[in-house]
Image 1 (tube, rainbow, N blue to C red):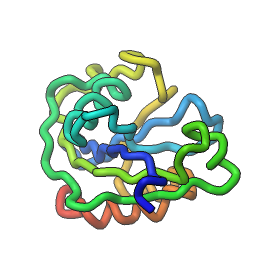
Image 2 (image 1 turned 90 degrees about the vertical axis):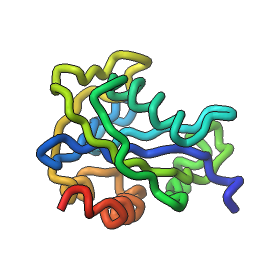
Image 3 (image 1 turned 120 degrees about the vertical axis):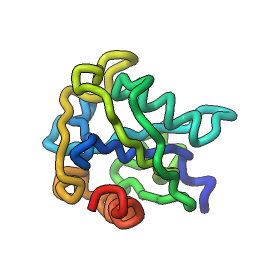
Image 4 (image 1 turned 30 degrees about the vertical axis):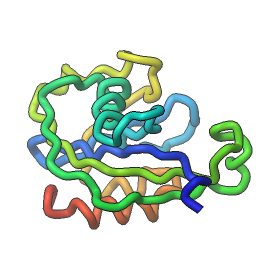
Length: 154
């Protein structure tokens, strides 16, 4: 089963006020917002992928601290109508290691265009609000992430 899922990472990025970073995707015109995430390249470790993705998607190379990594992989499945379109139809979904990071820099350090941009906007929100903002097929996984990391924001 797990070979049908693309390996990836997710980043639960909190600021000093325990607000969660979410971005609005460029490639999917909607009002859905998500936490930074991405695939693990080649021989990369999940930690290396997380650091790379945080730099590429949010523009952060410093002023953050990794607080915790999920012990287990968390899964989401793509809806049937997207499975043939996403990742050239190779995967049915994604399995991800999740990381909680604390950002202690200035919002001006956040840059969405450091790499090929994936987000057109971003904001800090209450972590629970992410359940109403994320694309529905990721909602179950977001609930797991919120539960797993609640000691960092409650």
